[in-house]
Length: 193
View 1 (cartoon, rainbow, N blue to C red):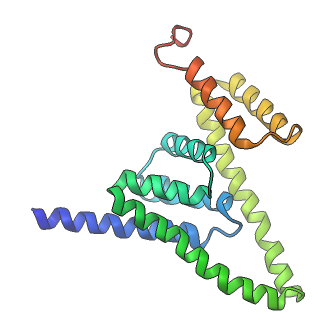
View 2: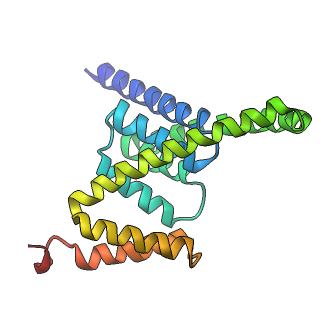
């Protein structure tokens, strides 16, 4: 029985590595473009987290300094398999990026003026936008369930205006909304019942 638990733990560690490795290796464009890939691995493929848990981790991760994909990998890896899981998830997230960055920066700098290279870079950009839009829509649907349409749309519009027009840092906006949710949406708050 003990060997079976060890085997299951090793399988989990391998899956953690593979999930975060895939999200990292295909996450062209940095952290924001890897978020939908992490979502696909941890929510859709392995079902380690619910959509709501993933949204909460993403919101919290955006409030903290540093790369979002690394923070999410560390937290999710730790939640699944403790310190070893955290280390494996972070290594699987960071190492492919570092290796590819070294390789591709050398290639791109050498051939950056070639139309083929410029075309490749420009061709990838729309899919990153589509992936982010798809993830945003999923979060919007989940927010509507908890907040209702009017409040979800209202907070979205206000957040967009504050972020785009007033150039307020997103971490500050997320922090304010976390405080709002804490004050006005607590389960024991009588206005929610």
